[in-house]
Image (tube, rainbow, N blue to C red; front, top):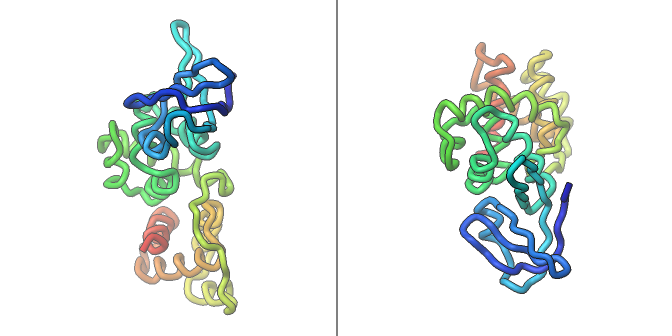
Length: 212
């Protein structure tokens, strides 16, 4: 299997490119975000590759990072998401936006992606939310993890407390957020939700706090 290609950009199409590697041209299908960020023709280029082998063809799909490629793989495990739809989703949403939208159950953001209607958005949230939360930060958003000087653990325990808040904080940390900001967001979300602060409501609410 081809996992990475490093060469020179030779040609650019609507949703594909040709990368010249030692005189061999490889056609690679890419998300629109990747194509928009390409260097000029003749310039060096390196892409992470997902290879799909079928009876009648071999297709290569190119991504700017291994993280983006892994997200594509995860998307295509969902019924109704083939390679074309997966590329359309990643062409519209960054990995950070996509994973946050799934965990926060933000259907409106998901349906902005090409090929994603309300039903598919619901399926993405149902099938991928727990998987994303269990990946220990593999799809972590690019956020600051600096902790304030105060003991945020004690402060959050006083304000939130209980295993539900602990689980919510752990979920946010697994997504790549700093423990301090996770505690703070869970605290604010729990106060806003009141009696409705079970885990299924608390995590999306805390993510919305972090996105503000």
